[in-house]
Picture (cartoon, helix red, strand yellow):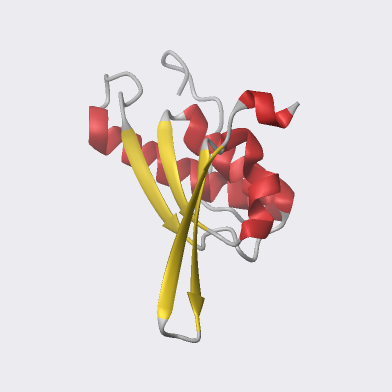
Length: 121
């Protein structure tokens, strides 16, 4: 709905392309979370964190960017557990990276890096 008028209406994803159906799934999830945080008449959440564990590890880069864009559009802060290969795809949405490595199934190591706009250029 956009100021009282329907923009899109779907009763299933049957008539949608694969990419459109994927975007619809993330749109519905983000919209439902936003509604839970601020209600039907509220604005975007002032700070809503969504934690996704390996949500994008098998998806293509375009799908990943679309999904991250939907959460961004709804004002969410994402915490992603994802393979490092996805950082380049998600760099527009990434403000920092923490890596966890485990050696010999015995000792884990944490590394933290801050990402700034100056580093991108």
